[in-house]
Amino acid sequence: MNCSNCRFFPFRKNFVNYFNQKSIHEECGVLGIYCPENGHSISRKIYYGLIALQHRGQESAGISMHSNQHISGYKALGLVYNVFSDRIINGLLGRVGIGHVRYSTTSVSSIENAQPFNCQLPKGEFSIAFNGTLTNFIDLQKRYSDQYSFKTSTDTEVIVYILSKYIQETGYDYFEAIKLVMNELQGAYSITLVNNKGELFGFRDPLGFKPLCIGTIEDIDTKVIASESVALDIINAKLERDIKPGEIVMINDNGLESKIALKNSRKATCMFEYVYFARPDSIFNGKTIYDVREKLGIELAKTSLVDADYVVPIPDSGRTAAAGFSKESGIPLCEGLMKNRYVHRTFIMPGQQQREISVRMKLNAVKSKIKGKDIILFDDSIVRSTTARNIISLLKKSGAGKIHFRVSCPPIVDSCYMGIDFPSSQQLIAATHTIEEIRKKIGADSLVYQSLDGLIRSIGLKENQLCLACLTGKYPLDLIDKETLEKELNIERNIN
Ligand code: 5GP
Ligand code: MG
Image 1 (cartoon, rainbow, N blue to C red):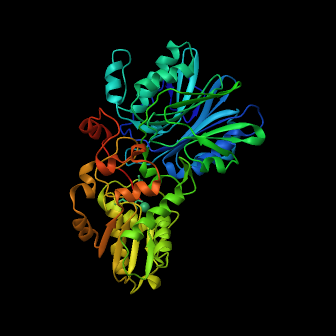
Image 2 (image 1 turned 120 degrees about the horizontal axis):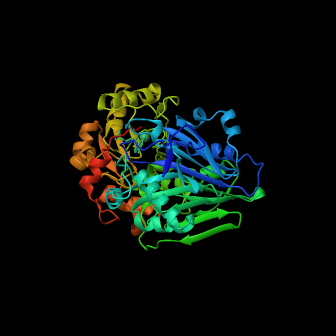
Image 3 (image 1 turned 90 degrees about the vertical axis):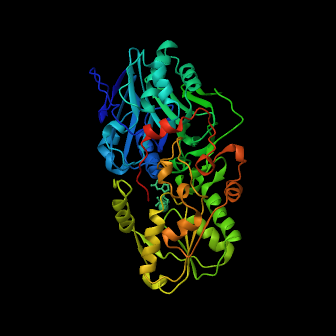
């Protein structure tokens, strides 16, 4: 297989190996659009969709378009609106294409990691955008090591290799090839793919960890596949449904074809999409994320009410749950912390000291509101506890009275190998400390986390439809060799 990592690609004859990344965790946003006719500026629609998915990844952005039996595209490091100029978008011709935004981690930030990934085969080309993490990529690498010499230890290289193998073996029947590939992959994946025949695919792992939905721009009969429904809203596409776990959707000139390639009655929707990751205005599994977050706050108000002057959210991630708490308790909501909106997550800040400075760069207290007041402080999650500790110290320095910390997620005690970029379990504060120890460490007057039941009730899905592994240590997949994965993932991340 031939792969390209050039910013601009039509594919070149020379083989360019893009697989030199070490970090394999991918929390990203993917998109795909199929329009039956020319003249509707599809690359521009993909661009707008990626802007709506920007929260899912700020490190790099890319678009691949099918045009004249070829795939061409552009990708670079940076936020979507920095990566693409008008000139570049206008140069990306075609009526079928995919897009990708990649999450920022503290691993080396390089163009080689940027997606979509492109692969040239003897009789075809394809490009994929991938969100997720494979848990069996090491096994797969071993299985195929006599046929192909893998350049890196990354799951993306494994997916692209196996895809290219089956595409060729099936005589370029992509639908069939994807089915065969899905039989071998384990873990979380939501993928869009475009090929040189102008076919668009969307497919999702059988447990459905990561979101992927489909909608239509009705007046131009155009199908849109996206990580989140907010990417449909921005281009006036109507949400039809989620792509089902284990489903492959293919859209070409004959219309839409769909097949459940893999069935599993167990599902494993990532609870963290509801708690933190997805945008509050997105709909996932028929539930608006905002409503779930508001319920998380209401649950906490029912179980952990204290006397206080204000409920103060940590922006932006604590805001919706804080509103729910305030609504239920009658304690007024006060935006006592202000965010510097120009400091982005793209700041790569390894190391604890840098992380602390990064919190201070992002947030400041409204002193006149805070001074002498008892506060219920709200955030979505505590991971290492850096954010909580720094913000409580900031509020105390600003003259706050008592600070009662409320967390809309239960304690995170185990790492994630399915796409959320949590650090290794030794660095998770709740894995090594009691709640009372954490309270002392962050300097709060009281600390209450969401209960597991409260979380499940708020999401409104059955427990066996959710992945709660980071909260319970019970992984929905067998065969997780945690030690090896932890080593290979080399987890280290950039939080805010
Ligand atoms: P901590 O400071 O405790 O290590 O992390 C908790 C903070 O990180 C919370 O404010 C939460 O909103 C944020 N957070 C949690 N998960 C993620 C993530 O995956 N990415 C980013 N950028 N921030 C996160
Ligand atoms: Mg936050």
